[in-house]
Image 1 (cartoon, helix red, strand yellow):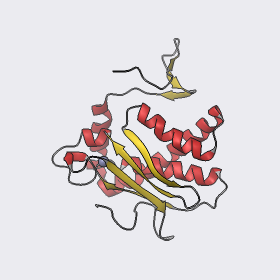
Image 2 (cartoon, protein in one colour; image 1 turned 120 degrees about the vertical axis):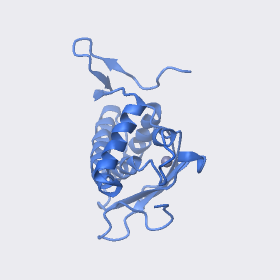
Image 3 (spheres, helix red, strand yellow; image 1 turned 90 degrees about the vertical axis):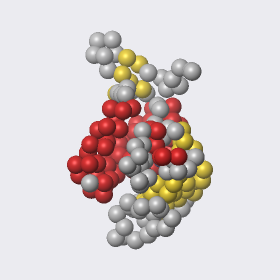
Length: 192
Ligand SMILES: [Zn+2]
């Protein structure tokens, strides 16, 4: 075992944890996944996924802006730093397999996803869709920071390691196919 690779500062007066100036929480994995499942069950997967997409995109964009400023990173470096930090914080081990910043597309693989590790037998669909909004948010930051035209971005978990169905989870992302696409789907190849 090794110590965390992210810097963690604890305010002795307030007890607030921070990394690079951003307040952080350290949570049991089951707590996060149980909350996630409870909301999914209450709202239905599609409704929840759409809400989650918007919320996680917003958070990813906020994080990328903050980290770019803190570390003086360029757009693509910030994008890569984001997935490195997620990996260092225990969400799973993200690997950017392909990235075309100009085209706004690429592929990310993920091993030891928290959702795949907590997957239950009843789950039949890819279970790591929370990360789709992390990816589209980071990609929107990248496109904007490079001065490219804003566009809808699609991302889908096209392979999931939950239940031992595959060795890795995989996310494919790219420009949404049409204005009518809400960014929630990659047109082909998805499992859902
Ligand atoms: Zn997965």
